Amino acid sequence: RLRRVFSLCLVIGLLLFGVTEGFIIEASFGDSEEPCDYVVVLGAMVRDYGPSPSLQDRIDAAYHYLTANPDVIAIVSGGQGDGESITEAQCMFNWLTQRGIDPNRILMEDKATSTKENLSYSLALIEEVSGSRPDTAAVVSSEYHLFRAGLMAKAQGLTAVGIPAATHRASLKVNYFLREIFAVWYYLIFGG
Image (cartoon, rainbow, N blue to C red):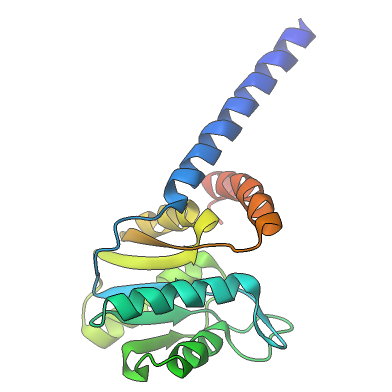
């Protein structure tokens, strides 16, 4: 009897694992790259030498989106964590403007310490600047993170158009896609 219960729990766990990974993979391809009025670029770690590989991937994706959609305003979002010499927002701003993006097209949200705060604070900044909150905005993040970011955006009344930042290191990609399953369930259960 105990064996049956264990087997049933194992099967249910594997099904949940597989279904969740399916949603993560589906979201990782992104949405149609139709231009939105705003694109929120989610931060990641800044190293002593500059952006971490994840942050560089996000900067590159934001650059391509902004270049293809010259009327879009970017909100680069991320505060300064332990061991970071500058805010993630400042790092992204520096790299984008050095590559030719007009600084007037970039708003910096430099307080957020989590994805939930990235989205919340960015929406508040848009409202402060424009007088209204958008219903839809593009969101740039690592491809494995788009599903969870979309869930968090939806919880804040925002339809997120996912713009994937491809993870270029294969060893990291596999690790992050598997780890994201647990992050999704942590978010669903605890809301954090």
